[in-house]
Length: 264
Image 1: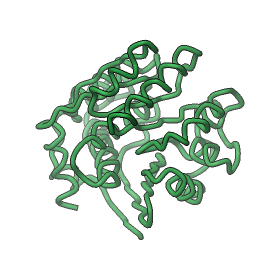
Image 2: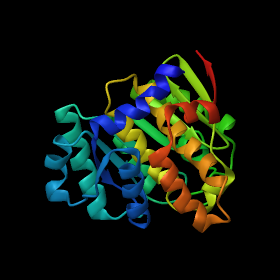
Image 3: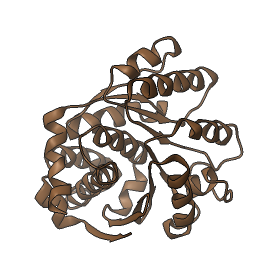
Image 4: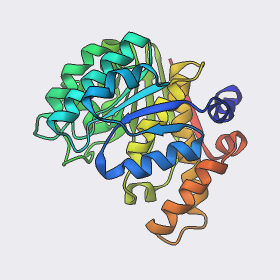
């Protein structure tokens, strides 16, 4: 895993521009996480500018939290621009398992072949058409229960599918990686999961294997969470310490604090 984690330095050297169409609740958190990790965020969701901006970005994130009609249009335009320019794009299907129009929208853009799909177990299962197990935007099943759904989506899109949980799962054609990292307190701070989707986009823009890029993004935030938990007294102090740790964590610490199991 030495070569994998060394790419954490590469992100800061390249400073990719990530075009984020994301949840309004987490824009500031997501932007701060990208900056701390070494990327540049752009929170642009105007339909008239989305395609052109996507073409000139390093990667695009489509996060379906806080959906509305204009955002759906902007997301489609950004995806179109990304595909035309060969820019990788990431789908974070927030709320895909809930009984609303988000699931239909997410299903419709699967035809545009996201390079990465990153979500919780319930979202991944719902997106694969294998059930509806969400409670709002929260997962109600374990990551292990989403393995078949992740494999199905990876085969359908030709991309990488990540499932977040107590152990994170990353799946691509013929390959599955289980990563143990992070701490439970991540679930008590808003925007940690959404920020992960954005960091997946940042790493996906680098000249590295896309599967490894997604695993590294998870390891980066998970290792930082463990460092933050060492000094945090609660969710508030954890959020601040986590951001500091994202900026400071080294590949050596990432290797020390995470555990990887790979199958093919």
